[in-house]
Image (tube, rainbow, N blue to C red; front, top):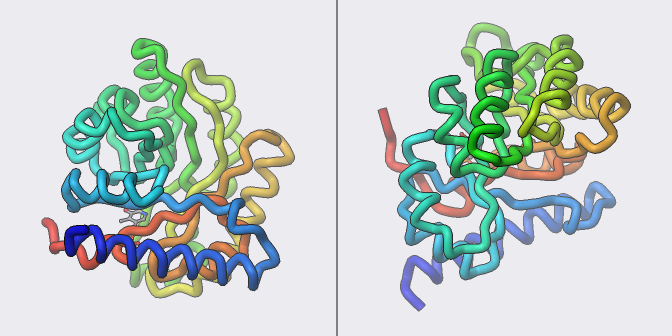
Length: 237
Ligand SMILES: *Cc1c(COP(=O)(O)O)cnc(C)c1O
């Protein structure tokens, strides 16, 4: 085993233990939580190594990186997630390579994704990225994107009605400098309301390396882990 494979294996074991511990605390089964490995800035070899270690879901936050890696990994049995802010003009490329888009936050993007998915004959699971800025310290952190909670129902209806798209649930990033527990409580209510309108939209993508436990105790079905799994990222511009 190479050093890197050993390192990833150990990280993965540690992360799986953290997920299992958080599930125990929350009285949930670890089967209810999918680990999405966020491989941004890391090479394709790491994606291959993670897949060999049993990781089934990987994610990228930039279209360029997704487009570079995913086609080279078609032999792997992994689901690709796109988790970054998305410009409408990049929708076609993302739809080609990603199976799930976590960052749907506006009507114009729904239109672009639907058009692209239809013409590529793809079906894309879409999560609505919800802004949790109201749980943050205000201007200090800056916006991390997302639709305001009050605008979720209308956006959800648009996705549910769009050709080529499937409404999957919600996604959020805890506000910088805020209490992730409070923010994820807020997300859980948004998710509950969404499920009452759209019962199949039951995914909650929340929790990163720093706030995994807070997310799992508040119902996260998908945790997006980068650094905890792959190590420190080089600083990018
Ligand atoms: C980078 C990224 C993650 C992973 O963050 P870590 O802190 O490295 O675990 C999760 N979600 C999104 C949207 C990201 O861009």
